[in-house]
Image (cartoon, rainbow, N blue to C red; front, side):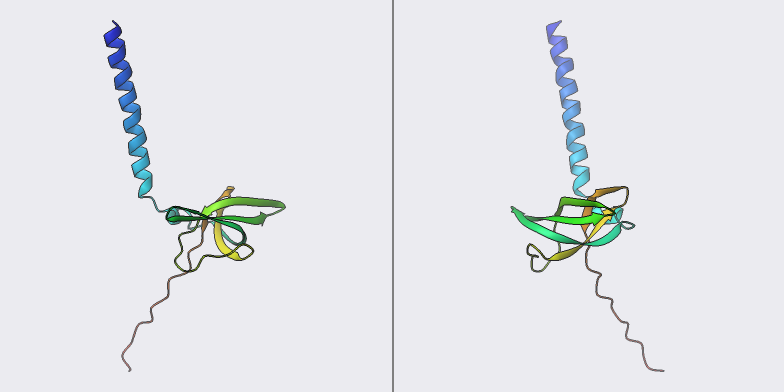
Amino acid sequence: MMAIQLMVLAAVAAGVGLLIMVSWFSRLEEDPYVECANWRRVNAEVVSVLRAGDRVFLRVRFTVGTSLIQNDVRYDVPGPLPHAGERVAIKWDPTAPARLVVARPPAAQQTSQLPPG
């Protein structure tokens, strides 16, 4: 009887572990910028910069109505890092203002070379 209980417990633990791994790997491929296409844009003040390995996070603050929102956001824009006191463009979710991403600069538009005439 004890062996059956241990086997059931091991099967449940393996199932939970598999679900955790699947959900973790599925989130690696998601692009947060697809979800935030309709979010609002604001210039937030950088409070501090945190480097964690090869990733950079900014602590930013901005106002929504009468509330001051202060949160960390991953900064994955190429180029120089902003310093404390500078402003960066971010997008925030109107239904949950603490959800935010750094607004990527618009890609340079390519002008087509039309033949004369």
